[in-house]
Image (cartoon, rainbow, N blue to C red; front, top):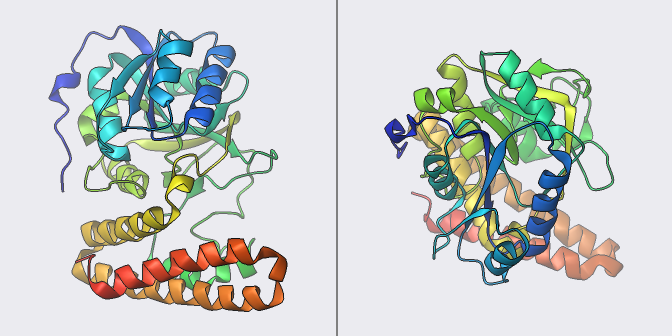
Length: 325
């Protein structure tokens, strides 16, 4: 696996925090994200790096015009989420690093609170805020690691049938109180604040993950190296979701499948890869069957249902064709 060297991170820190945003055709979200950072962060000395993965929607031009103080790097290609973040981590010069998706809106004092807490707790390698949906309801952002059991439950959809069960929701941790600071296995990679010292120990994001599951891999490596990962609900942000993935839903479905298989092969070997590949096939098949039923009983939503079924078909075709070997 390609976990790049971080020896060149031994710098004299110029900023307390460097905020890195990887963008691909999310101009509208990116503008709101940048604006929210500047208007809600008052106590932390920070700089911002936007790594644009060859957007065609005018994102780079918007940053240059509206936020000239931002460090803009245009990659010229869609280099993927992990690789683009690594570019920003290497280029930046700060004690802490914030990785944030362009479709995140930072709420009052969120970044200041996260930086303050990680400064006070030297064993924390990653800290993340409470993530909200656009309607301000809770969005899952703290997870357990994928296991044989919870992956099976997820594939069969039982996590939705029993949303508060410790047995059936061990992956999503829905049974946890969402207002308590706690150590977790995994935090959603949509919004992290990291200690650069921890990055030096653990390494950068694994670029074998083009998008998806790099957060699970990185958190696993972080915990293995002895660092804490903390969910900190006093800090809050809104995650709209789909800021980039909505542009190419079928490609993103395939990348999600590929990332899951890459994760299981890396951490559980070839048997793990075969297991998750089988479960992925079962899940895509069940979702397709569900789509057929919904198509019949929900005629008003047939366009949306067809789009979802097209994604399921693409996933099944990819799994069957052996492109994931």
